[in-house]
Length: 260
Image (cartoon, rainbow, N blue to C red; front, side):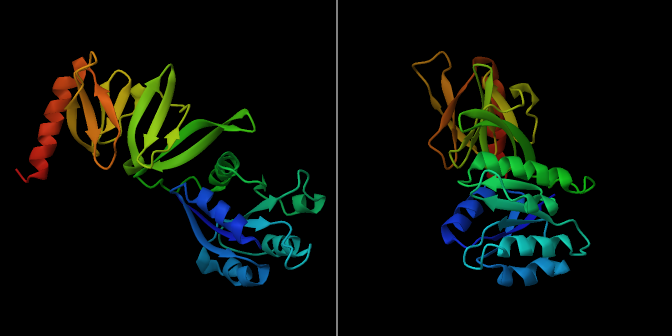
């Protein structure tokens, strides 16, 4: 399952912010960015584009105050094989009543942030056909994030190869990504991480073993060793009861990599 999107926004800075936030989600493909409705329309009406959603500025100042709404009405009248949703981006708390007439998927109130994007993407994914398979390397991670001081639940599709390790800390689960981003308050206990190449190495840690490249001594702790990762300065402790399994798996990995 993937979300195919375009952005229609007259300000380059706003387009850049939204594109970067959308591309944090591996299942989202931004097929194009347009500064006016005229250049966006041929892409929108072409069935071959197979768009799922248009992120549309409700007030495109370079074309006049009606341009965004007029494009939305044209989209709502299209006869396409797939459902095409509209997400209005707006600087106003209360969008025009007319905006509700085209039944948008949702609104993104500027300034746009990750929590707002996550929330609207959840709605878009729910509207997609459920018989489409989820791409195997992606998993859904439901986690908490803060928006204006309030906790908001957000679903993120993350590639298994993006995950370095998972940590349980004071009844809170955190997913540490290779990009150094940390997903906080993950709604999935440590014992339920059974994906391929994931290995429990400590009561509080699950490592993505595909990135484990060795270990180092940890003389100042009860745990005598730490697991190290390829391409990262991070390391995690190896629990005493997990040492045998860890070193056995590491030896097997080394043998496999050497062709033995």
